Image (cartoon, rainbow, N blue to C red; front, side, top):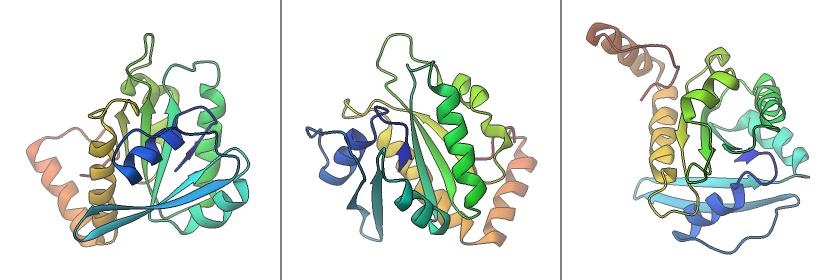
Length: 182
């Protein structure tokens, strides 16, 4: 999990790992935690902070999934967040991408579709999904985003299944404007 400082990565990581809202401090390098999603799924969660770029360059290219957290209220830094996400993806061919549009509970937050447009997510050549979240609210969308990520990683491991899902979606008339599969 990565994103710009102040986006809410540590708060989200705390909620996922501990199951509740925990007091956090800004992450200066990186922290590792393990989340038990269900009986069959454990997610190793790296909270990569401001100075954890070495960890990002080392581990993200080999990851199956990437969670990118963006502050939905920080319009000024949105170009910087976009550049960071696209820069990371140039170095990593494997991971499916979950963008958590955090702070949706704040006034003036950009909607997930607006963020997707401004961050040029349609140009990403892999499965991706954007989910509006609020890290401080118990049912703030974080777990739903992780559910999508888990399903997308399973599909990505089985290319035949991935093709079948796309074919089924075309047959049912689903819009293919975003690349998120599940």
